[in-house]
Image (cartoon, rainbow, N blue to C red; front, side, top):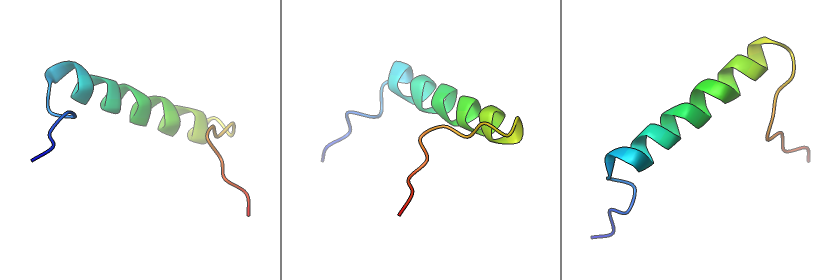
Length: 36
């Protein structure tokens, strides 16, 4: 099975991105917005 997301570094990066997305959303400045 494909598990390239499994290394600690990859999981940490996913969490960092999620936290930053949430922080920006709560600040009223969402990032990575898809319109359409």
